[in-house]
Amino acid sequence: MARKKNSSAEITGPRIRAAALRLFARQGYAAVSMRQIAQEVGVQAGALYLYTPDKQSLLFDLMQTHMQDLLSELAALPEAGGPLAALEDFTRFHIRFHRARSDAVFIAYMELRNLEPENFARIEAMRRSYEAYLEGILARGKEAGVFSLPDPKLAAFALIAMLTGVNTWYREGGRLSLGHVENIYWEMVRKAVGA
Amino acid sequence: MARKKNSSAEITGPRIRAAALRLFARQGYAAVSMRQIAQEVGVQAGALYLYTPDKQSLLFDLMQTHMQDLLSELAALPEAGGPLAALEDFTRFHIRFHRARSDAVFIAYMELRNLEPENFARIEAMRRSYEAYLEGILARGKEAGVFSLPDPKLAAFALIAMLTGVNTWYREGGRLSLGHVENIYWEMVRKAVGA
DNA sequence: GTCTATAGCGAGATAGAC
DNA sequence: GTCTATCTCGCTATAGAC
Image: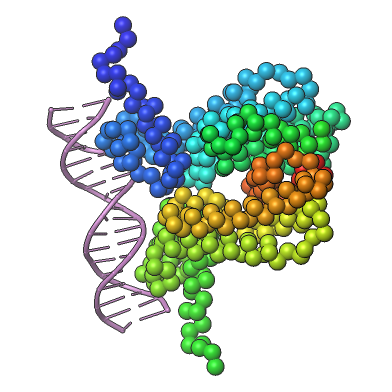
């Protein structure tokens, strides 16, 4: 029989992380107090330290989990036929994944400077790995003559920035559905790489 | 005869703003203390309050000045012949302007959430005005049949995000000069709008 | 596992000497 | 115009009761 004495206790950890994610995204890591997080969860501030050694670790956990999810979902994408199909899959995946986790995306970009050097290096390595995946698609497409682009590395930076930018303006229930947005951005991406 | 008694005093205001700009960009508004700013300038914390009523006003001044500079330099761009030339001018202007003020750009984007509602609204209005300028170029080009793009508004968002992204990776003395980067991005922009 | 209480610190802002 | 000194507040993190 599974332990069940206090079911609410067993989900306090995830609830703390969820509250921290929301608050860090809205106000910024430095501006959020542990008391605020505790209040959001419905516990006292001291209780948080049963789940995290300190505030910095809480931030790092959120960012690390986010980047690990990103890389593992990317790896789970079905194999595409050629560079053009792979680029379309990447484009649609990037928009959907980032849109679904706008708080984590915002934190992973904005709070890098609040990480201690060692933690920063770990997150950066994962980010570079993600960029390298796209750069690989672009380089292969260029070699195969499918894409026409001057510099795969810069193109990867440019496309990722462009696609992530959807998060700054897209709102549920607006003029366009996310599927429609995907189509429009995919058309711009396809043209930008000369395909 | 101009007042000259204490020349260092006359430049304390600008030095405070410069120090705040640097520190806010590197550590974030909430993480920077007035004492830190004062130390950077070489005065005591209390002296800062001769130049700003409080910390929030200091942040708002920096952001407002930045946006005003952006809009006035944009307005000072020479008239371009057609939409294609106007788009190229905008592209190169955006990259150069933002690259030259990366601290202010970072703050203007990241610290929006630390502004009081009224201040936020003022900065947002200026940002929308800048976006509208690009959207106008794109809409005119689309109507004239020079550009082929599905949605001028989304294209404006996408291109601005893409161009601003240069700031996240470009470093002086790297593989490419800024002029070279401009050329590469301009080629991607031109293709993306189907010109 | 959560609470109350608090230690220890540093923050923003102000008062008054010079 | 700048300094020193200080008020008041809120913060992170910990101790110990339950």
